Image 1: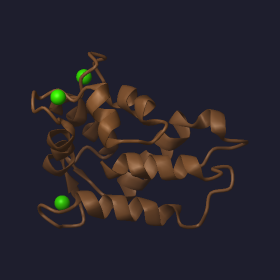
Image 2 (image 1 turned 90 degrees about the vertical axis):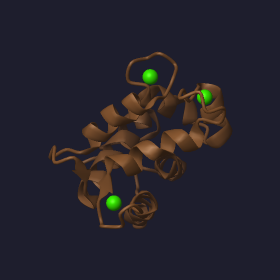
Image 3 (image 1 turned 90 degrees about the horizontal axis):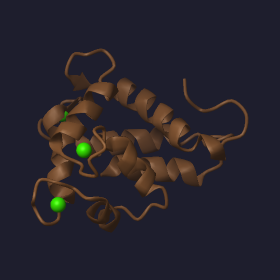
Image 4 (image 1 turned 120 degrees about the vertical axis):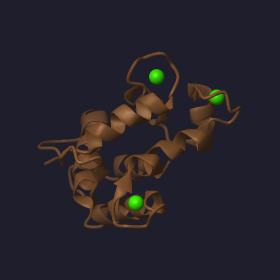
Length: 139
Ligand SMILES: [Ca+2]
Ligand SMILES: [Ca+2]
Ligand SMILES: [Ca+2]
């Protein structure tokens, strides 16, 4: 859930001139996911758990409507479409799993803080590219 807060926070700033505390946003969101176990890594179970929090009627499908109840960011619908990998208008564990493996750049089934920062810089840059001037903030 915090990932979208992160992306919204980044979109709210002038990304052509990123503030020095962008990394702090990243670290705070990462720490929110890393809880079971708290080991400095985000495991897939920690990432996938966001689905059950957002699936308000517990039918295993997070609809856009449910998503927008939880996420009030103006760009939430864009993020929903990004996360819905099979385009069935449902966010399911399978979608989150696919996303997790994109974030897990090294393919070792855990996400390090470095992978997290890199991925969300790039995602923010991709989703909000039209808001950015000049070279993006991605690496
Ligand atoms: Ca962990
Ligand atoms: Ca649902
Ligand atoms: Ca889907």
